[in-house]
Image (tube, rainbow, N blue to C red; front, side, top):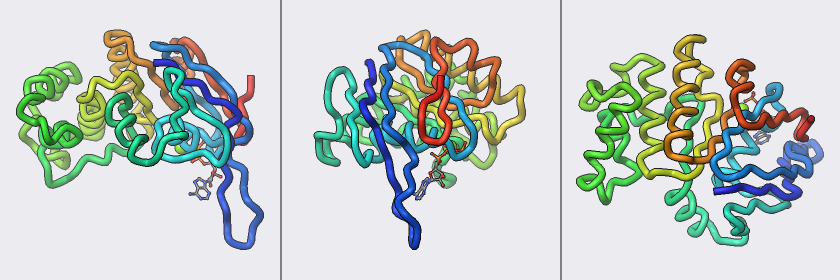
Length: 220
Ligand SMILES: Nc1ncnc2c1ncn2[C@@H]1O[C@H](COP(=O)(O)OP(=O)(O)OP(=O)(O)O)[C@@H](O)[C@H]1O
Ligand SMILES: [Mg+2]
């Protein structure tokens, strides 16, 4: 699926301050199946941008087209369906539910069909290398393993677009590289579009395109 951002802006209101402009007239196109590295200094607006592209937040103005569909013309219910059908999200911190096993966490997004999805969940867990942890709780896993589980959860819907917001932020360099490699490989295998926020120059150079943000704008 391709993504087009047109004149995207996002302002936040702050007490006693003028609106702060976090995204300023952003335009770009991401082609279907492309792997994009999104880089830029802290506070540049990277998380804000991918939350909007991932339909978790609305822009103040501008449009996001996914496969030609003007997503924010739809109501919140539409965004929710669109997200569930097409989008996987991996956060900096894994956000696994501590009282559910790894398998239950993976199946949470598809709980109504959990019996049908069980085999697929096992095969994804095998692919990310933590099948042996399926009946354990997240707290028993290392940081890298927890992040692998979060990736498995993002992939259970066979999303055509995957967003990952510094998924390696809490990991050591080697483990972080493995996690990012896993996301790249999975995107190549399934042909899904990947937008990865990363500070890793080595990996960014392997992306099809690098989008660099500074102060709410795209820089070349
Ligand atoms: N809900 C909010 N209310 C007000 N300001 C916000 C809100 N969310 C983000 N901001 C501000 O927007 C700016 C961009 O934040 P954002 O989280 O998108 O940056 P980032 O590029 O992801 O940074 P980092 O690399 O540190 O994660 C920051 O100045 C931040 O303080
Ligand atoms: Mg961020």
